Image (cartoon, rainbow over all chains, first blue to last red; front, top):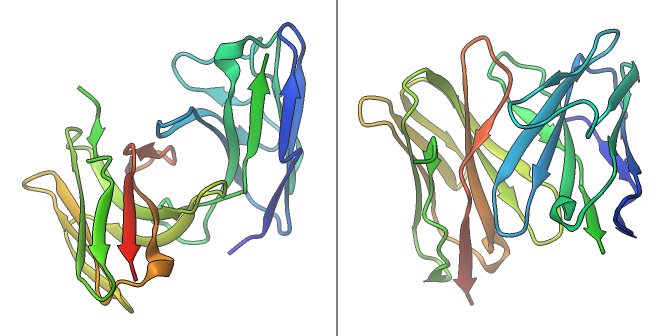
Length: 115
Length: 111
């Protein structure tokens, strides 16, 4: 499976500011995904990022709040904009697997606390 | 009602026990089913993936899917303290890569 790294691993931010999270994969992948895991809850898909096209956002998530870049086949960024304490969460990137079974492999996550 | 329901636990078992973890779902379009293990402060790790109904075995792990009942299970044989983690089920529709997750079951294997 692909090796996925995320930066930063954790951060504490002030409300009203923005944070950009980086996701790096050690091999080229077609699809990358961004999820949010709020405390005590499950993973919720924010958006799907394909190289060379606009990200596709899930219901309840908008580009102005969570802009995403996908400049090449091994890298993506997610920005959490104009943060509020409700944005405190773990943000995870994932990549699609090599089979047709829709499996995904996840990075270690970025733990964000907004004060 | 959530699309995927999973008992949050915690489920506590003695070492060596057989563990049964389960999820129910409401969306009949789900075709692909996965189980992930997540240790504290780590990302989810893929354990098993299956398509449609049936069983799949991998070492101490067996995944079962019963689409008629909209019910999936993960069995862990000879459980070890190192199996202590949160187990997440996930599923997706054909032609769509997005995964829908259960809320996770926390498992504790007592030595």
